[in-house]
Image (cartoon, rainbow, N blue to C red; front, top):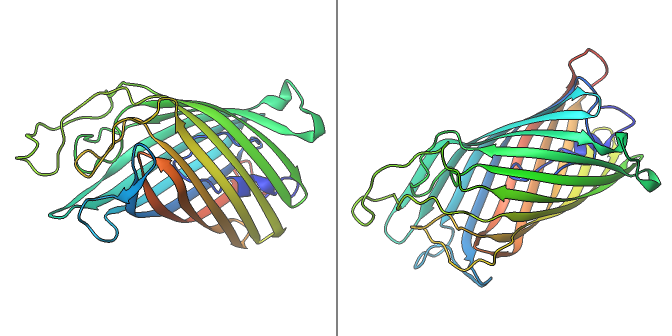
Length: 308
């Protein structure tokens, strides 16, 4: 890791679903790559009006399970410009009072660019800032199954991150807009008769509604082999949720959710790190009340042969 920027790798302890900019770009040729396993479990959901109720009616205990793998990488392509890529392999299963439904398939892919805005306009107090543009693209999966690997539509987001790093400490925040397009051309459907064919829902192409994204985080690297992090992030649909979801209708049109969590990174050797994150869901509307745990292995290295 570059000694002058110890917070860069720590800031990459990201929940795979997040779509917010970091405040720093990577040096040319510097790459951060991560493989992670995520386990999300929920017994309850937040209804469209924010009440908590069982995720599946008449089911005691956990009834929503997401056990997925994630690959993520970002690298400095040009001075002040970082390229981002990610892919998920989704394994999601849910249970109701009669059946267990499971789907395993590639989920959404992510492509993005992060640009250092400080190259054109410096902020006071040594603040760094960057803009990030991302696309989340379905990978051809079937979207009207129970459950589905993703919503099936193309999403795009633009966000601004502002951060401050001092020695072993950093803090940053971000604000963004996710445009959830009603274009479903990169996902498919299967013909089914709901109520007759188990594990499918009517194929719809509803406009899922744009969202405001917000994130704050802080981290500390007391030693070169240890880093810790605290963070919170919110996804807020501009339209208030008005229609709920269930096991048989698993994809809400509008959602609002707050996540809070902590992260830890251990690096036993210079080029390899173990990362762990835990998130809770203290509030939401039209979302699962889940406990999310992510475990991963990451590496930061320099393709140009310099210090990693």
